[in-house]
Amino acid sequence: MRVLVTDPIISRFASLLAPDGGHEVVLAAGRPDEEIVAALPGTEVLVCSRMTEAMACAAGPELRLVQCTGAGYERIAIDVLPRGTAVCNTFHHGRSIAEHVAMVMLMLSRRVLRRDRLVRDGVWESVSVDPGLPLGDTLAGRTVGLLGLGETGREVARLAAVLGMRVQAMRRDPSAPLEDGLRLDRVLPPDGLHELLASSDAVVVTVPLNEHTRGLIGAAELDLMRPDAFLINVARGPVVDEQALYEALAAGRIGGAGIDVWWPGEGGTGRGGSTMPFEKLDNVVLTPHNSGHTVETFQSRARDIAANIAALAEGRPLRNLIR
Image 1 (cartoon, rainbow, N blue to C red):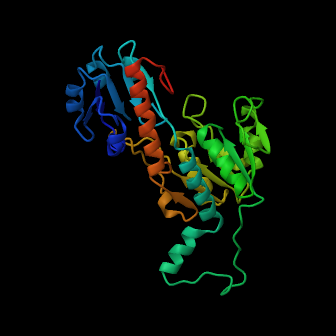
Image 2 (cartoon, rainbow, N blue to C red; image 1 turned 45 degrees about the horizontal axis):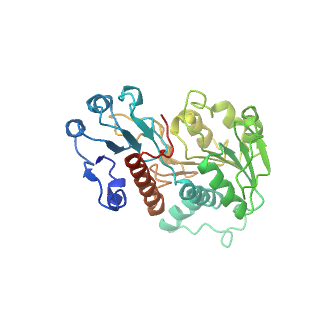
Image 3 (tube, rainbow, N blue to C red; image 1 turned 90 degrees about the horizontal axis):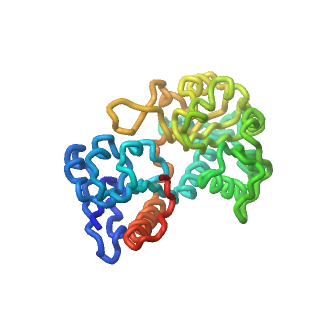
């Protein structure tokens, strides 16, 4: 089969996509959209993180599979694809993001950003110098609240429990059985959001972005949080109201935040950004949507994609079928 790969990160693991050399793998990452459109006719598998309407229209009936290179598929023009073209996604980012969340919680609870900046400026801010300074906190004994219990939420729960934290989560079906080895102190239904916000020392947002979750956390919800609590968003930016979050942080109404996902930007780069000056605050950890970007994540995704390519060639069921 002819496999066209336009994702630049998965392209780095191209040798894993067809390990037996049985398929023609064409690497087209970084090429202009018009070149991708021209390359699509005759392609049977497209491996991508983005597919425009023009690309979907250019795909011929030979296109059998659009394989997303991550969990999200909001940048895939699914409705324009030829009928009968399967769309699948892949995951394997949970542990990497969970470690990122733990890192951010530790950085915020120990005020690492402020202390790092001051030391670089020659200021030694420590209780050994000023006994009246506030002390940091350990994570053990504190409560983390998870909005969503998918792959990322489950991995955060496991890691938080190892650190001695209490774990509570909000999920669509609180009575659904948990995975083996996963232990939660409390599970709340969707209408328990306010209770979760008010009773958590750290709130971790992992829900997908849809019509129900857009703006899920706004000014009213942030006001329910404890004044020393953290909000960490590793889902999608618009789940949280941008201005409301900035104002809560700037006014000290919440203790801190971790922002790894951003609000839609201009130019179609997919990078996003913010209209608020979060970079001026020292109680927020800012990262460029890379919480899941580890070698382990992308090696596992490449193997997952290779398994789907092999399954398609052999007529077996596909993994993680979206449509």
